[in-house]
Image (cartoon, rainbow, N blue to C red):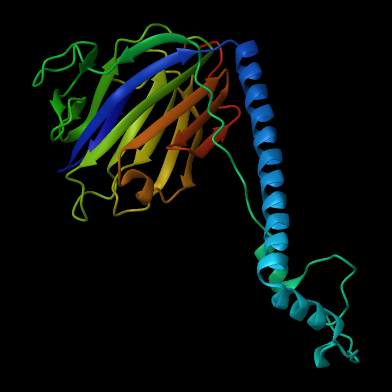
Amino acid sequence: MKLSKILPKTMLCCLFLFSFTQGASGQFLKKLGEKAEKAAERTIENRVERESAKKTDEALDGVLEPEKKETKKQKEKTPSPDDTPKETSSGPNTTPNPEGSISGEDARKSITVYSKFDFVPGDKLLFFDDFSNDFVGDFPSKWNTNGTGEVVTMNDSPDKWFEIKPGHNVSYIPDVPKLPEEYTIEFDFLGIGLDSKSSTTANLAITVGDENTFVYSGNQVQVQIPINPHYGGSIRVDNRVDGRGEINSAVNSDIREQISRQTHVSIAVNKQRYRLWINESKYLDIPRIVPVGKGI
């Protein structure tokens, strides 16, 4: 597994935390079930709270503002001129709606898309590095590179970061053991020195392959995250199976706001399935992209 970058005339301060964890299928499904159960409980609690608040407000209105309540009742009883039945002509927008239906602008307003942060980290730690055992100014001891870099601190914070130096197609490989079929990856990165003059192609590539080398693996998956906060770009994803590319696509994702601050990346690999979150938003969920039985 390796990280690489294409960062002409830029600097990236990357990887405060990088860890791999493994979770068995049973544990994975169990945790998903627990999360679903908790989500249902939260939904019920929220509904009860809303209904209770509504009833409480109505009761308080009756006690504190009785004249307001009477006025409201009178308005409900008194028909307005607009309530008078009117003749309607035939046409696409004049047909009365069935009782309880919503149309037009009200229908557009009522459509809301919901999602959730369903990343579940594994329960067996395979690799972890927060650079606490490395000296500031040194290259981190658990990594290898064909370029250069060093451990640094930021402002007055005691936390250590791995500073990746500017370069082209520079790779950084952690000393990770052989990965199982199911595992997760998490790390943070922070962009520094990236401005409107930086290359629009600046990206951070995350590659999982069957070889920990600086060349392309015969079997691998690579995701390229654009890291220029002034360029929307796309998240690119491709794979290679026995040296042959099968998937090569770009997901239109304007993540400038996401990467304008410290950014957390979460990845979950479940056999062939590959999912990626940036902060708590899911950007990739590809069911069959990881080569199976190829040592990845």
